[in-house]
Image 1: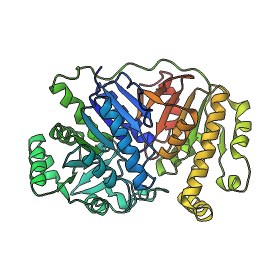
Image 2: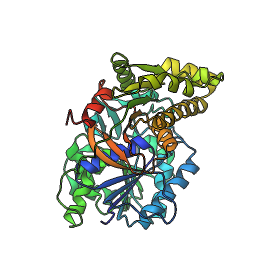
Image 3: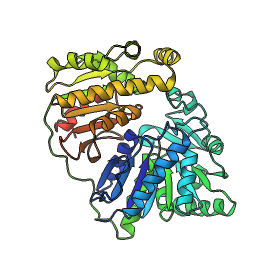
Image 4: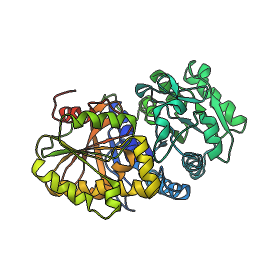
Length: 426
C-alpha cells in the first residue's frame, strides 16, 4: 500500500482528530507517536500522521521536530504534506504555526501554502479572515483563555503576519463560495503578488472540499482537521485511492476503564462535572504535589479497589480562576508540566494494574500519557463525537485510547465513549 498523504500534527489529540477525518473518508490511516527511529519501516497505510508535542515548545525546537517528521514522511513516499494545528489556531503571538510552515515550505522547495483551521462541524468558521466559534469571534468566546496558548486576536491574517517573514494574503468567502476553480485562481493571483501564505475563509464543509480540491497540487497544505475533508477525493481522481467509505471496526478490548482529564476548557469542565455525578472521581491537586506529596501514588491507591468495568475519573480540570492561582504560584509551564507528569504516572500505574481502556482529555496531557505508556502507533476506530475517535495502540498490551482535544465533545462524552467502544452506540 502506497503512502499518499503525510501529515505532521503539533499535538496528539489534534493528530487523532485528523486521523478521524481521513478514516471517515476511506483512507487507511495510522497515527505515529513522534518520529520513528531512522530505518523504521513505515506502516501499511495510505495516510500517515506523525503526532508531535510541538505546539507549546520554543519555535526552534518545533521547527526541528517538524523537519524530522517531514524527512520521515518523504522517505515513506508521501506525495503531499499536511501540517495540522488546532481549529482555534491557538498560538501566542510568537507562536509556532508560521515559523514551522515557513520551514516546511523551504524544505519542500515550495513557495506558497494555505492556512484554514475551520471545522464547521464543531462550529469553527472563518469569515473575512476572522475566526468564529459559533456566532461570536474567537476573541469573545470561552476558548480565548487556553491556559498555555491563549488566543485573543480573531484576525488570522494579523496573527500570522506576526509569525511569518513573508507576506500573508486572504482568500475571502466571496471567492471560496464560487468553488475550487476560483479558489485555485486566487492562489495563483496571490503567488504572482508575492504572497507566500494565504488565510482561506470557510463556513461550510462544502467550502473545505472546494479548498482541498484547489490545493491538489500544492506540496504543503496547512490547517485544522477539516481541511483534510477534500484531500482523499484528489487521490481518487488520480486513480490512487479506492472508493471505499470508512474502515473496519477495531477489535474488542477488555479490561478496566478510566478517564484522565488535564484540560481546563469549558467543554471539558462540563464533561468532568457530568461524570462526577455518575462515577467515582479523584481530584489531582498540583499544589499538594508541589508541596511534596506523591499525588500519583495516592491516586493509584484510591483507584485499585474501584477498578472494574465501570470507568473512574482522575481530574486536574479546574475553572480559569483556580488555574490562574496555581500558575501564579508555580509558573505557567511548571504547573502544566507537573499536572502532566502526575496524570502520566497514574496512567502508567493503571495499565500495570490491568487497565486497557482509557479516555484522555487535553492535548498536552495526551502527549504525556502516550509517552509514559510507550505507545508508538495507533489504528483509528469509531467516532465518538466530531473530531474524536477511539484508537487501538499497536504493540503489547493493546490499549483502547480516546485522545480528546479539550474543546471537543458533548457533556456526556466520557461515559458515552465507553458505550460506543462496547457497540452500544454507532
